[in-house]
Length: 81
Image (cartoon, rainbow, N blue to C red):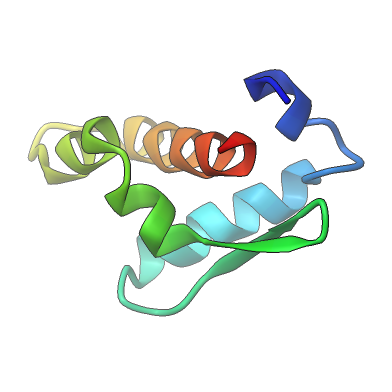
């Protein structure tokens, strides 16, 4: 599976990714999962596995959209991993 394949509506609906990203950014300690092709992805673990996402979230000058995109990317990378 390539990166774009994970984002197809049948695998991860955009609404589910958006909800997971919002939940994570609202409370980074709360367990948040996304179901992809029958398996559950832990959003916290996905974020911690991506150094770039950790760096973006730690930046004081990162915009909310940059943070959302970084978390979204971590989820999609976990989905193809």
